Each structure stands twice: as structure tokens, then as C-alpha cells.
Length: 486
Image: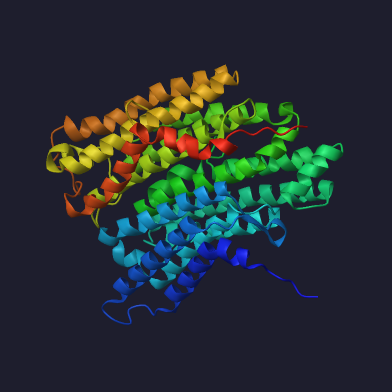
């Protein structure tokens, strides 16, 4: 008896297959075989990422394959397009960055494409083992990029902290999966939901789900599992920081959405209070700790922790009538603003100074008005000020939470947003209202050609915040609400 794999499977997984092929092609290119080896590697990487994005965009084959190991739906397609767009955009940012030669090396290109492929598989699986393996492929690759791309004491320290704490999160996930399997005798999420509907659940089943939530909370950098984020974000090259801050949030939110019907079948008293505590702590602690930071990347790291809390509010609201488009809209708005912010920082960096402080940005608004404006726009969006796309994102998730009677969480979120105004506006004040400090050893660089690529996320964010919101909701509305009957 042989396994027959339908042709639809190959069309659905074409994006993953292209990236795996691209990673192997990159690995086969010998380092420094010619003077133009960097150009060859970057062309290979950009080509395969672009091909994967096109294959995903035009794919119309939906279905479940290999017993749930790969499930391609319309939501999966949206998430895959978002992941591939982020990966491609960051690759393009590195084309004119001082770390270009370090990033476009065969082994780095191999890892980068393989990480992206792991993310695609992670967000398209109903099998818990496939989830774990694909997550570890992505995580281990990122650990390596942080410490290997530009090795130094600080980057190695950040990579080691991330690796050790990440291993603890993996242990939580693995133990949780084993408890769930011991209870339901299945690793397929759909079959586990059938078990929950049919039989009473033993105590270790709830314990297994709790351990899985804690593991995902680490990846999402929710408090108190956030300790790795500031050091890893600060020590990594800025492009890799942008990749972590956006890519991992996309995939974890996508998987929590996939697991959400399972939690909804259970009594909300078994998970909602714990999750609400994590949400509230993340928003308050993230915003308060960001106030005392002088490194811009470290400030954005703590800001990212707070935004994880805002996204988690939208997840909580789903159980009380919230809509899926509200969460996805906020996720997209956060990704656009973060890419714009980190992209602006990359255009300011020099080979000597890749960890800009507030003092380095003094007077930058007069030296390079375009980049200063784009960075300011991204910060306004992250703060949730009108008329940016970030304002609409927060408005939608807060409205969903209020409809679900989540008043305490909304109050904490509004308070956290008010606190965040200080450290976001502080960066803008240094760019426009402070005189340039000539005592700075390595001030921010001035380069106009590096900033043209940033116009793309700016335009998308501008259109999404003004013309496209209704179109976005109309596209996702047919499957916008979770309603699982117990």
C-alpha cells in the first residue's frame, strides 16, 4: 500500500517548497568564490522569496493534507502573504545596509529562507508535533542569526539568553503536548476538539493546555516571560530585530487563533483569568519599563511587549463576540508601523553605530527630513494617534473588548497607551527640537537613497488607515466570528 498525495498538496505547499529549494541553492554557493558572490547570494534570496510570495498569492487550492500536518485555508493564505512580505521587505532593506556583506552570505541566506519556510509550516498545521518541529526550526535559526551575523560579546550574550529561555519555553510546549496526547490519544487539533465535546477532561488535560499557553506566551514576549526580548532585540542586527518583532508575533497569533476554538469549548474560567493577568501585566510593565530606556531599539523592544498585550486583548474578546478582522487589522497595522520604524533606523545606521541612542538622533529632522518624517509617522501609529492606521487598529480591538464586557482590560490598555505617548514623542522631540550633539562619537548617518524603500509600507499604512479599512473587513467578514457550540 502506497500513499497517494494529491496534486493540490503540491500547489498548496509550493511556497514552502520554493523556499526550501532556495535555501539549498544558497547553501551550495561557495563563500567568496568571486568578487560578486554577495550579489549572487542576494539575487538568489530575493528571487526565491519573491517567487514564494507570488506562488502563495495566486494559489487557489485549499484543503487539509497529510492528516492535518498541512492545512491551507483563506486565513492561512493571508498569514502566509504577511510573513513572506515581511521576509522579503527585510531582505530588501539589507541591500543598502552596512551589514549587507554579512547578511548575504550562503549560510545566512540558507538559514533565513529556512526560518521563513518553518514559519509557513507552523501557521498551516493542525498537528501538534508538526507545530513544535516547525517552530523549533524557526527559533533555532533566529538564535543563530542573532549571535552569528555580527559576532560580538553583546550579540552572543543576547543569543545565549534567548536560546536558554527559548529552550525552557520548548520544554513547556513539549510537556503540554504530551499531557494533551495522554488525555485525548491524538495529536490532531480537530480530533482533540471532538474529544473535548464528547468526554470529560482529566485534570492533566487542562494542565497540558496551560503549559502550551505559557510556551506561546514566551514566544509572544508576554510578561513575565519577556526577559529575553530587550537583550535579544538590542543585540541583534536591526533587520533581524524587525524580523523577530513582526514575524514571530504573526505566527504565534495565527496559531493561537487555530487553537482558540479548543479553548472556547472549555470553561472560560479555566484559562481566561490567567490570560487576562498576562495581558494586563504585559501592557503596564512593557510601557513603564520603556520610559527609562535611551537605546531606541530597546525602547521599541519594550513597546513590542506592550503591543503583544493589546493583541492578546483582541484574542480574549473573541470569546465574547469579538471579530477576527479586528485582530488581523491590528496585527497588520502593528507590522507596518514596526517595519517602518526599524527600516528608518536601518537607514540611519553606520557600520560603527548600529544601536542608536536618543542622543544620536538629535537634530536628525533637519539633516534628513524624509526619514525623520517616516519614523515619526510609524511612532504615531504605534502610539495609536489619529489619523494613523494604528489608531484604527486600537479603536477596533477596544470596541470589540467593550462589547465583550472586558472593561478592566480596556482601562489598562488605555492607560498603557497614554504612558506610551511619552517615550514615542521623546524620540520625535530629539529629532526635531534638540540641537545636534557634535560630541556624539557616532551620530546617525544621513543617506537619502536608503530611505526610498520605506515609502512602500508608509503608503500601505496610509491607504489602510484611510481608504482600505472597510475593504479589509469586507474581505474577511464571512469568517470573522468564532462561534463554537459546546
